[in-house]
Amino acid sequence: MDDDRQLARILVLGIGNILWADEGFGVRVLEALDASHVFPEAVTLLDGGTQGLYLLPYLEEADGVVIVDAVDYGLVPGTLHILADGEVPAVLAARKVSLHQTGFQEILGLLALRGKTPARIVLVGVQPELLDDYGGGLTATIAAQVEPAARKVLDILKDEFGVVPTPRAGEGSLVTAAVGRQSYESERPSAEAACRIGDPRVLATPRS
Image (cartoon, rainbow, N blue to C red; front, side):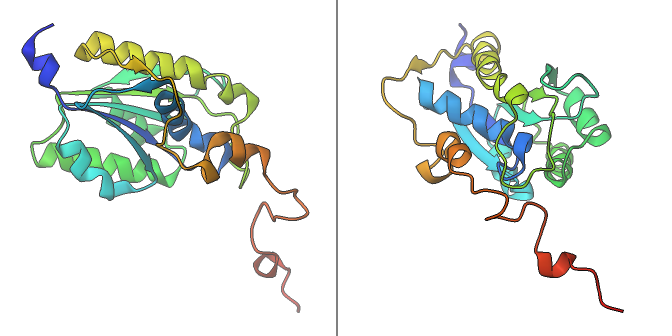
């Protein structure tokens, strides 16, 4: 391992919205990584959610970035697909699954404009199955890909950056217990108790 790889600042970024079913994939993969491994100081795990331009400073400081997200590749749901560098903004521009990817595409453009694009960007994406389910967790198809995606991230860290995290004995703290996957998915209220599609006062048919 050379010194440059040892000193590289690596950002592992999970983006997406856990409130919309498979859109939360990136965050859930980071949650799994944090629960299973301790990462060296040079590696930052970040739940980017849907923060858009607020993520810019984190990417500007990184030498390498590994992004995990749900991406419409036009493939069979549950398919994991990895892209790198120039392929990343191209696929996000052509196949967005939500508004947060529009914001992230803007970040990549600003990084290029400012001459601060990380030397290496890798996208670990999954083809989602269901997005239009407010308050829902990952579908079974996508949940089955959380661990495989986490392993792919670990492989990328090792192969690209020479980083080998240490297995964790306890629990991680990246995601608070209230929105952790287990409690979030198991404590979901019934459809009768929580509207899935919007405020019924707004959706009511106007009187003539």
